[in-house]
Image (cartoon, rainbow, N blue to C red; front, side, top):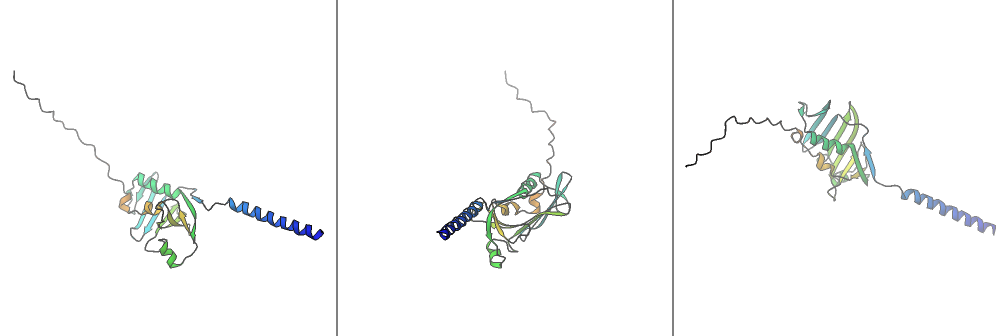
Amino acid sequence: MRTRKLVLLAGIAVLLCAYIFQTINAHRSPVKSYTLKDSPDTITITSQSNGTVLLTKEYDAWFVGEDKKPASEDEVRYLTTALQSIKTLGVVSRSNSEADLQRYGLDDMSKITITASKGGKELRTLVLGKAAVNADQTYVRVDGGSETLIASCNLHHQFEVKAEDLIAPPPEEPQAEDSQTEPAAPASEA
């Protein structure tokens, strides 16, 4: 009878451990947010199709390229907001095989690499692959990681830009008003 009680208690202990383990794992979500603690002052976007696009911030203004052409504030805000917080929904692959890289658009011909830094210190590196089956998701690798993740927005579309797309349009010159008077109305016959 004594061994029967011990076996029963041991069985209850094993079931309790399994229950605790399941409860803890059930609350873990594969969704993860990558948030920048600082705002970048340099963003480099590199792709095979568009070359390298350099954005630099001086004081409160952003500039495009080495020749520092003024950047469109709206376009840069769109990119910096996307970099500020990235939400991933889970891991889709842990493989570095050429076939997997090509499958997710992370091969050298397809990928877009974004590096954000501040004061020469790298804050974030993203390697963007193609859009997923759901067009509002992108395959991505974050900060040099070897896991291919799925991000919850179409980052590939956002960062597939050329330098000329980011240059601010020239300011419109105010039009001079005509100094001529309007022509006189024709005289009516009486």
